[in-house]
Structure formats: structure tokens, C-alpha cells
Length: 621
Image 1 (cartoon, rainbow, N blue to C red):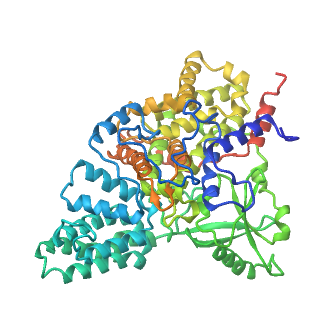
Image 2 (tube, rainbow, N blue to C red):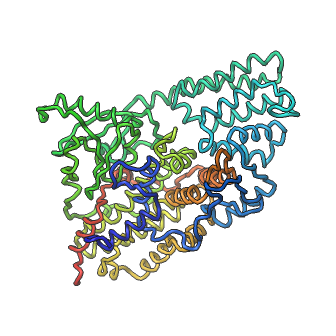
């Protein structure tokens, strides 16, 4: 153990290494963008004590040193997702009984095989699965721009014998291209709208090609009209949507605690959305900037310089600024000027600082992040039912905002992804926030009887979240109660009635990571939509799949792996297949509870939490 490293720090370091690649958040700007972005996962699930011990070593499908083409698992091999429970896997297996996996091939040939399946009028269950697999995963092995080019080329191709698709006439070929194009546009609609003219070029070109072919193939007329509607949709988003985004600048969780903003229903963030953000200087003064969510670091620094130019506190203008994220524990991460969308990657109490390179070592957390004051919790005046209801509603809003492709972008591309997983990162931030909220509320309470009451209330809130199938807040609450700074409070836990102790032990067994989180997966299997899964575990499964199986062997794509990835993403679709409806009547104070739940005040510095815990119950008590 390194000198001065506490057992807790060693413990957390072990979990970080188990769940993420090298190059974590606390390091300076080294390593790949993907590893830095995935490092946020380790801050969300720090108390998952081990990775799947019984799953065995990571299986190498093939080695880069192998000269021969890989031999993929057979169609009868177990290719089911580790994130699916046994019941869900059984249903998936029955659905895929006749599904024939595509052989290893180049990305373009896989696209041609997909079109061949659609053109062959085999548009049944097998083709539907293949089409969905391809749509959800093609950004991994075939860039969207390249995929669009393939579709345009195949639509215009005459398909002579021996080229392209022998055996299919021109009409079948063109209808197949349009079928695949419509699925692509439908799957990525929101993301394509965000890109504006860049994405509208493809449907326009395809529309012009289709119009020219109408005289030869009049059966295309309905699809041409449909394609025309798609060009209008991508060119002109709904007017009400545009108006709603013009109304106000949208705050993130930790930015500007405005009651009016937090009470509004949550909407999906887009890169073009503008937000307010405070950027601090080394003396803890700050400037407030208005920025796009996807803004580059270089643009943020330009806005900061412009603000400092008119500041009376800055007599001299800094020549060279860098942007640094400083956590409440003092860790620093320097961003590159080319980094984008950094706002959603920040930790719960992480703040942005702008400074000159020579001032980097002098940066320290804000005073409110390293000092605390005892006090009574507002939770004492709120009912557990109302708090649980508001947690569930807010989690559902956040979960509904996440595009299913964000899961693929987060794991496989990180910061290099064409589409940023902005909304998914906010869910991870929320999960970490709830965990630390539990510890903060309990450790700020000086009265032992009141602390015991808070412990009972949190267990009751967790039970209600589980009952309403919000496994995100349920497990976040359990992990928060399992925080070492809380679990060491012997007198507090001894004062808890036996009924609640037994109930919490049951909850701990669900959070137990042994046997690849079997208890949690069994619980998940027993639930039906709508439900909110523990998102970090799904990301952990995707990461494990990504790093244990190769995607390419030379130019050949492992499409078996793509099928497994798509299975995991389809589980998200199943969880959201039914809309959540809350039946409870709101109480007169529900707005106050709603504002409280959506703007939690937390301490995420583990050393500070331990200091607070030791003052409440010293080690020798």
C-alpha cells in the first residue's frame, strides 16, 4: 500500500480499476477520451465491491497476432447478454431460434447482406432482428456518413448479374434501400435533427434520386412521398419544440439553483442547448458564461477571457488560460482545448477553474466543499411516500430522455462519438448524487435519536422506490447507506428497530455483486415495464463485452458481438415500453418536496464524510 494511503482509499482505488480502464478522472489530461469519459462510471458505483468472480477470465475471440480469419461462435453458442436476467434470456432465445448470424465480413459487405435480406422479402422475425442489430450498432464499425453513401450507391446501382445483388430486380433493390433508410431515419431522428444541414443532405439526395426513378418504377411513389416528409422533418423541427427551447437557458443539476427551472419537466438535452455556467479563478471569484452544451473548451476559455476583460478584479489579462476541473477532494483534471461537452462529465461537486498553467498546483476546492456545518435535515418534515414519489418521477424523466444509442456511444466511442451521451451522463451524475445525499443528511445530524429516524426514513424510501420499480434510486439509496462513513456508526445502527435492520439486510443482498450480481438480475427478471434499471450496471456489462471481445480482425467485423450489444440496448427499449403513471395524489407540500428532491445538497468528499462520522461517534465509543 502506498505510504499514507488509507484502507478506504485503497478500497475505492480497487473498485475504480475494476470498473474502468486506466486513465481515470483524477489524472491529468492523458489517455484516450473514451477512458476519461468512462471514468465517471467508477464514481457512480464505488461500492460494488467486486466484479463478477464466477464469470471467469475475459474470453478472447481472436488475437491481433492471428494470421487466419477468426472463427466466430456458432449460431447455437451462448451469445446472450450478461445484462439480461435468466427469464429475459429465455425469451430472447425463443425469439432468436431461427436467427442466423452473419458471417465475419467487411462493414460494407455487411450492409449489402442486410439489404439482400430485406430485398429477398424475408422481412420476418430474423430480418427484423438483423435490421435492428445493424441500426443500433453500425456506428461502431461503419461511420454514419459512409453508411449513407452505401445506401445512395446501392439505390442508383443497376445491379448487373455478378455485381451487387444477383437475382433481385431494380424495384426490389430500391424498395429495400428505402426500407433500410426509413429505419435509419426513424432510429436516429432526434440526433439527426440536432445536426441540421449536415444530416439533411442524405434524405435530400435520396429523394432526388427516387424522384428520377418514378417514371421507371411507379411503385415507389408512396415511399417517395414518405421520403419528402422526412426531408421536411429534418429540415424544420416542430415549431413548438423550437419555441420551447428559445424560452430560457437551461440549467444543469448543479448550476444556478432556480426553483422555477427545477420544477419544470425534464427534457432531453441537445448539444445546441445553451446553459449558464460559473467558471472560477484561483482566488475563487468567478465569471458566469452562457455557452452551448457541446461547446469546445477553447470556446469556453474565449468566453471567460472576454468576461475577465471587463472585470475590475482582474487588472491584467491572462495570456494563456487552461480549463481545469477541480473535485471537492482536490483532484484536478486538465481539459484539452479540443475537448467538447465537458459540462455533463463533471462530478457532483466538481467545479470548472480557468487559470494559467503556472497556477495549476495552487487550485483548491471552494470553501463550501471542504467545510461543513451541522444542522437538522429537511427530511424530518417530509413524508417518505412523497419523497419516494418525487425520486421516481424525476428518475423516469431522466431515463426517458436518454436515446438508446447513447449507451453505445458512451462505451464504444467516448469523447470521439459523433453523438454525445449527454443525457446518459446526467443519469450517472444523478446516481452519484443520491448516494452522497444519503450520507450527507445522516452525518450532518448531530442528535442520535434524529439520526436513527433518518436511517429508518431512508430505508423506507428505498423500499418504496423498489416497490415502484425504480431500481436506480433504490440501489443508490442502499449504496449510500452502505457508505463506510455511515455503516461505521455503531450506536446509530444499534438503535434501529430489528424490523428495519432485517429489511436493510435484504436490500444489501440485492446489491451484492457476487455471482455477477445474480440477486439484482433475478429481481430485474421478476419486473415488467415500466421500470428504471440501475443504469451503471448495464454500462458495466457493455464495457465488459466491449473489452472481452474484439470488434475487428483486420477489416472483418465481429457481427456476433454487435448482436449481443444490440440485445443489451433492446432491454432499455423494453423497460420503457410502457409509460410510467403515478397514482398517488400530490400533497399540499409536494412542490416543496419536488424542489428539494431535484436540487439535493450533498457532500461528495469521502474524507470529509469520514471526518464528520468520526466526530459523531469517535472510534473509542
